[in-house]
Image 1 (tube, rainbow, N blue to C red):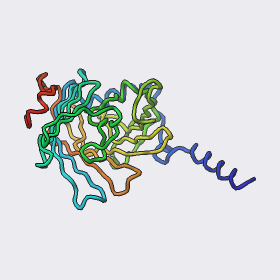
Image 2 (image 1 turned 90 degrees about the vertical axis):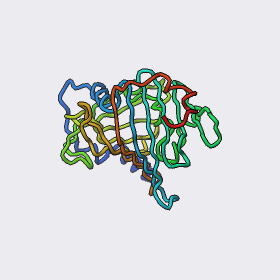
Image 3 (image 1 turned 45 degrees about the vertical axis):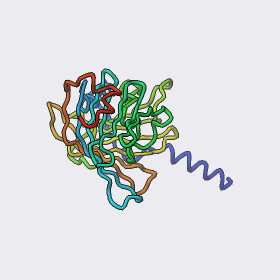
Image 4 (image 1 turned 90 degrees about the horizontal axis):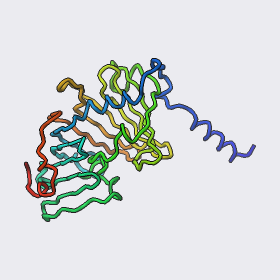
Length: 267
């Protein structure tokens, strides 16, 4: 057998092995619906209309110190609309993003200009972080645009040693243009809150991991107040989003989701 053939066989066998994180799963009870579990997880974080105040911390080797950004976001899930306004630091204050499906606009206050962000830029970094424009506008739905498969139950989730979780695989519909080849989510079996997500490309390569921590009760939901995004291919990079305030089923005026509002400055 040639050395080349040996390498091919090793690679094939290695790719067929389950990850260590999935190897120890126990089976779920028969009849459990992966889609229902995924729906409950999304409901735990997004009401019909949600307002979030948050602080984002960006770390990377090119930054001499972490970059801190504060923002408020208004989300109308049913209307597929969202509005986000930067409040700090001073150089970014007033910068706004408006999504009215399927369009995304950005307002740049220092030049008093509104620009449309094309679909080709959905994977570009958002405000210099490891998040993307697609993360901001949530153009794809993890419930509507994916099929769901329940892989099993994990008794001890990384960074959540006292919680057990459903492990759900999200596979995109063939006719849906989404970013990820698949997503694997760990969803708390009792609280319906996502504890961890892994995002893979079309070649089944892990691209990034999102950890959800500091889970607290909010309006009869369990909500993570700290999101930690780690890109696997960028050593030393990390983006944290800390939720300072979150209001579910808020009353949001339609004028929030307008291009005129982009130019009004801070609300």
